[in-house]
Length: 61
Image (cartoon, rainbow, N blue to C red; front, top):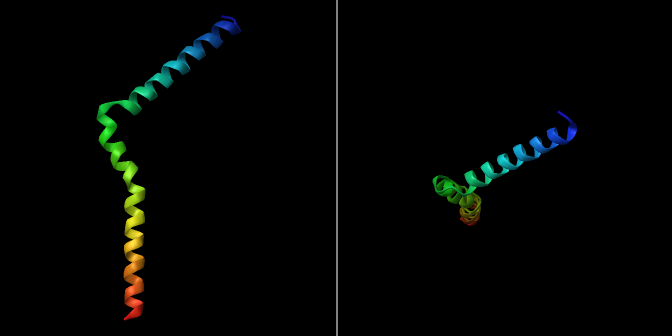
């Protein structure tokens, strides 16, 4: 096998791997997990804001 054939095989393998990742990312089975993961940052920010407000109220008292 020469370098051209090996390069072609490698290119096809990487392309198939890429298609697998795209299929996994857009499959309906993972939608719920990804939706939940996308909201984690906002949940943490809301909790931090609530804790900050509670801390400020307790310092005023």
